Image (tube, rainbow, N blue to C red; front, side, top):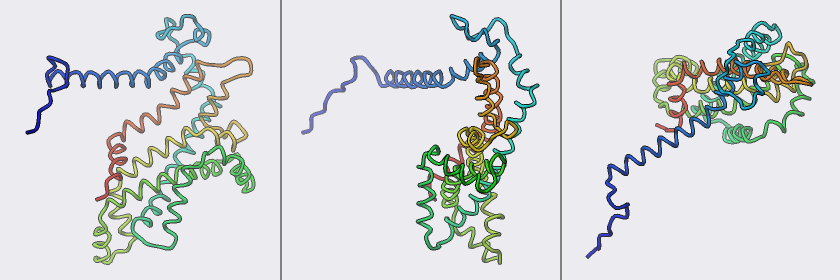
Length: 291
């Protein structure tokens, strides 16, 4: 006859008490994680409202007594600084649109057709994700200069697409794989082509996946620093990350302006995420389960 072992829980601890303790521990863990992630952003926001001299006060203060918008005024009234934002918008939006267009066509081909070397091409696409970008700076610099695209928008856009396209193709291929092929076949039965099936049927129902890929692509391009620095020469072609770095002078750092520009540079990505939050999360998870 089997022997029933006594419960090893602490004496007097009921299942309800254990659940409360587990929820409390989970809440504390999430709270600590939120503080760890949010504290630097909060400090950055606080610094942007201080004078540059007040930044070095000891002991430091999170809430300043001399609230000032001087750092934001200096950024928003400086034509050179505004040009950095314009450049970032042009490059990031162009990269997002072109990446989505190319990735849609490639993903549809990988998901719906069988063609020679498809597995090899897929392996190459995945392997590109594993290459550290810094190892490609010199080759891309030589290529961009050789093509006459140095210090131009096309040079930056095409280079950013090299790093955004693999992820976009992988994600959209996984998303298309969740859609039944009967949708395509029904279009062909009605006399439509594969092109019609893609644009009239698959694209409209793939909006969550496209939004997820688009938001990710925009963030990667907006925040890219290494190639934006290497492939541009003049300030009228530089982007926001380079503009922040240029506030580090030879003899002094404009910390309040750096923080203000960082906050302003974070706003477009934050708004984009908040607007498309539900579709973004749904698009990320939908491709993980194959119908």
